[in-house]
Length: 583
Image 1: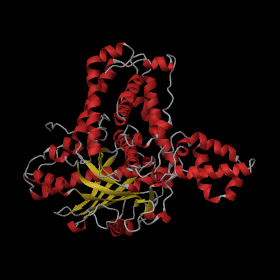
Image 2: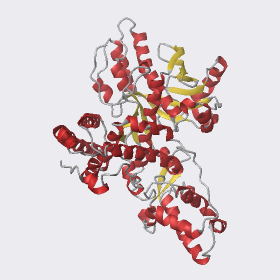
Image 3: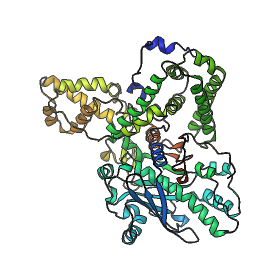
Image 4: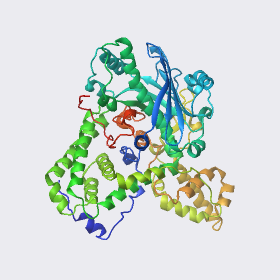
């Protein structure tokens, strides 16, 4: 590997202090979005940093489980700004009824995150409704409703080992990585819960996007290990062990994400813009910080982090050939980087090497996924520069029409901002080969094949490129006939385009809100959309099961409640199997 240390200065000049953000034409391509990994700005990471630094106090005033582990648990959470209750019901689940799909109606665990403390009357109300999930109703004291199923093989193995006085084999745990997997976490007003406006304004501890939902999954993780310890102690009180803390930190929460998550990215373009822009701002800030050169110690830190990613990717178990091949190639490319940093670090630092040199080399020679791993690692090196951006991850989602804008100006915006949509030939069958709809039977979004599958009349409006193209064609014709009229006149004559016009005008000033891909192309890979959103949540270990859904792991490697208030290094981004230490 050879990198010209002057490449950056030749391109931008030595006086450059702040690099521009990467263009949307590069960042918002589906394949690149599907190569994102969690970063310091991901919601699990920011939540853990907050809980740890603020030393949240979490106790269990009610821990009422029988010898089989079934019953009721209430955790009381004393956060910095308020008190909350995490209420959990553990049930017997007949194996024949075990189903991780949205259409399931029974689960091993059902949970609710509530504001304040829970008295006997409210607990009974929750006991009647929380286990029903969508079939029940809760009130606005509830912030999140969730459920989870046990990974029976791994859970039973861990409990059995502890019962016999042994620690479980980390290699066995690594095959799955969790004891429970969540199948949903509902918030923002669904089923009678508190809406986002209430959570954002009244409960400062959870005022960041998806913070309450992520906390619910964190508490599920905590209970899963507590229940394993409890059952082992019930079965063999004299010899049973409790899980080693290093193993506990390695255990995460499983999750399977399908097409249900994809519409969110399309329907919340302002929020997606904000997430991506903050991530890109973090990267640009880091690149600017390295403009005058990177010291040897920081290069050594990057070498260590790169080796960790290599091990992390090697520990991922997936049957997906495409993902497996990608992991192998990314590891090979990162190994090249790692060896180069080890061999040339001192020389490179002396030659005023800048991060832009590495980024440009990666973009020229390596896979997109390798490029985005490197970008993520660079962000990790400068927490003092990027962590403050976590407070800017939220935005109000509102799209408005500007009626006084001329139709000619609207057309110019489309040509400038949606050139990618105008470049798609929608006359080809392949360009309109699929359509999105919501299955009444499965209660989930689905992809149908155009003119073959039923339901086209119920198509979901996710084909932004096609709608913009149609709006542009109609607007061009209108502007030729009425060259001096404005958008208000156009909408009156063509009301079907009001939503598209509002979106175009709203997003005109934004960089990253629109995904630059044809989401109704016959070869579309929705898994890229899923991975993008999951990366901002903070998951790891992507295991695609098809092009339509992916398994992943949440909070693997994260600190424990017992770690709160202690010195903490936020380095659990790419979890690897622990080497056990004595307690």
